[in-house]
Amino acid sequence: MTIDWIWENLPLIGDLTLNHLWLTLTPTVLGLLVALPFGWWAHRSRRGRPFIVGTAGLLYTIPSLALFIILPTILGTKILDPINIVIALTVYTVSLLVRVVSDGLSSVPVDAVQAAEAMGYRSWQRLVLVELPVAVPVIAAGLRVAVVSNVSIVTMAALLGIPQLGTLFTQGFQLRLFVPLVTGILLCVVLAVILDLVIVRLGSLATPWRDRTVVA
Image (cartoon, rainbow, N blue to C red):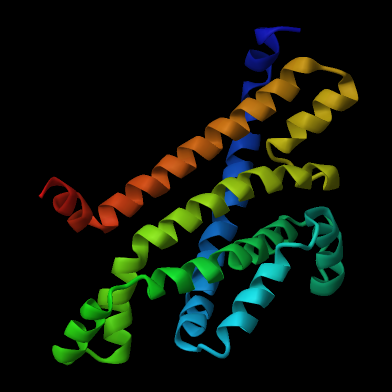
């Protein structure tokens, strides 16, 4: 049982990696889209912010395995339906990003907002053209935490029989094989690092003025 196991199971490992990637990225993107309006609402409402941010934060305290099991009852889906995992991780992503989006919008300099108002920007124009772009570094930092967290939590779905890299863990334990176990762990780490670097790069591309500011 050496490297030969990897070569013999390369198609399986490839399929599990793609499934893992899909189960990680889909809820990350959906979570960001849901968190943006709630984060904006928390940023705009001083009275509502503690409730919105607090409620979102509490969602993260729900144990992942319990959520995976409860969701089929609520949604009417089957226990092996990957949509349960997508929705559960979307909930976790929202819980992490609502505060991040609110903090990011709050970090926008008042001068920039006032300059936009002086130029006649409407509320939604200030948000889309000024506040959100300036808040990108803060939001990207939170998104990096969320995506790495999702890469890890997805592995729990292996206990429900949903194929992804966590399947290599259960296979390794059941068959008492060391190689699939280590392969699954290493691929999760590599996947997390790659996705983290991708978000860093996208954040840099979305804020080109930061590089110019540093050089200046």
